[in-house]
Length: 167
Image (cartoon, rainbow, N blue to C red; front, side, top):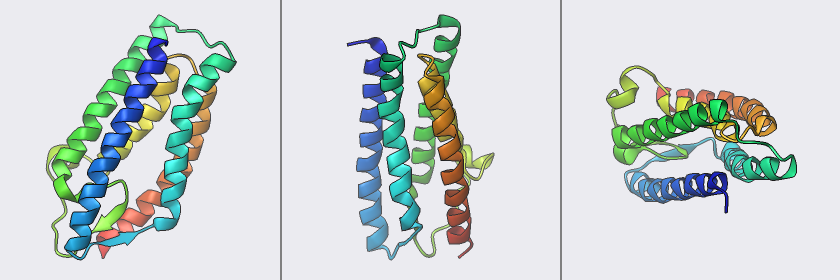
């Protein structure tokens, strides 16, 4: 098994951990009267992120993409920093963090951690990872397609979140 395939497997395992946290937090939010917004676009986000994890190694294998150290190592550093940012968002939001848009009435807007400098820092991590993960092994086509698809999805997602947070 190649180191890149192992990296993709580790990112997939991280995503499964995220989903476990999200499920637990969703149950808590619902018990507190949490309201979910934007259900229709959520399945497309899941599909896009699953597609990213499948397309990265597929492109490398199908098109014999090389590992170029001058590109791969910096991209790996960005992937790792994106994971750190993502989990700092999870920590800052605590039980309010979710992969879905869920608002618990009466809960204050979080302004700690990375939310001090950005209203949507998790999406900074998503964008960085979506570009960098494929480029670790020069899967530039996957990086391009995911970035375009993700841009459309994030435009919808941010509108839904902003409307939900506005009440």
